[in-house]
Structures are given as C-alpha cells and as structure tokens.
Length: 170
Image (cartoon, rainbow, N blue to C red):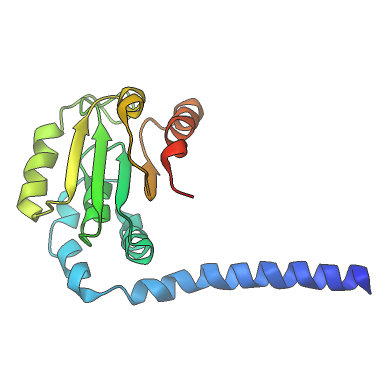
C-alpha cells in the first residue's frame, strides 16, 4: 500500500503539472486587450525575427510576474525586447554589441532599434551597447525576467547563464 500510494502521489503531481502547462494557452486568451492591440497593431510583421511565435507567451509572462527589471541578452532587431516592453510593466534592458555575429550576420542594428523604440512609444526600454560579460561586471540590479538569446551554442549559453543568473531574484 505504501508503494502504491507513493506511485499515485507522483502520478497526481505529474498530472497537476501537465494540467497547469495545458492551461497556459487558455491563459493566453485572457491577455488584456489594452496591450495586445499595441503588439498586433502592425509592427510585429515588419521586424525580422525567429521569435514571432513566442509573442503571446512573453506577454503572458510579463503580465503574470509584474516584473520591475527584465533583461534581454541579445537584441538583434529588437523583436523580443519590444514584446517584453509592450505591456509597459517594468524596465526592459536590451543588451547587445549591436554588430552582429557569425550566426545572425554582421550588421549594426543599434540605430534601427532605437528608432523603432521611439516609433512604438516604448519609453520603458533602455538599450545597452556592449558585450554581455563586460556589462555583467558593472551590473547591480536584481532581475525578474532574464531572456538569454545571444550566440546560440552550448558554451555561449552556459556562460551567459552562469554570468547572469546570479542577478535573478529568487
């Protein structure tokens, strides 16, 4: 009976977890229209990004956590940064060297993202130009949401996580 109860308990916890995960799409349906209009008012299709399918999740996450500080490591053309900032909750720091890399291509997007930020009226974004490791040495703010989206290989992501996760609030 003890073994049977333990197995049932584990199955119930797993079932509860699965139900919570399944409810996320329902929760996404309940995003306040006051800011979904902003993100779907025409700009989303004009910014090149592989991140477009994450827009609803990012909005749900920001609304749910009500963060003070969001850090977006890796800005490129700003799509994820703009998604995190659109609810106008907290301050979003978009950190990037803004010169590209061998994966995303070498290009300067700094002027573009600042122009787009002004165009969208997102005054809660601060773009920080520099390399993640150097910026981290000066960083002193607790982070509520950390989005790691820089160079996409194991060692780079592991390094970004090890460098920045110490700033994330418990």
